[in-house]
Image (cartoon, rainbow, N blue to C red; front, top):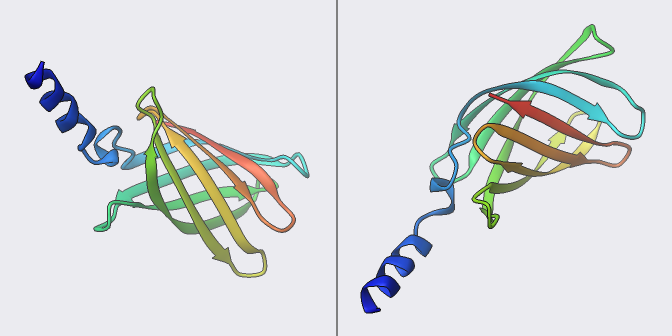
Length: 126
């Protein structure tokens, strides 16, 4: 009984980032819920020294206007299914602050975003 308790306690003390590693390249699309616009999206995600992640997103708006921006995502825990939960905020010139909440199971990465005039979703996979 004591051994089971010790093993369970040790598993609970593992860092949240060990649940899923989201570093690497991702590809998918973005969708803006307010305007209905959508487009292709790619991301490169790297771990940071503080246990979070730095993501660089690149995509196209109106199918021809390229965009690129970076965002810092901090791990906030895991779901019961072992998915990694993250959140972050990024200020973009001319657009204001974008707030993100993200979840990843290691194969899929979904981030909802909201800003003053925009709300939408990034749907990415490996």
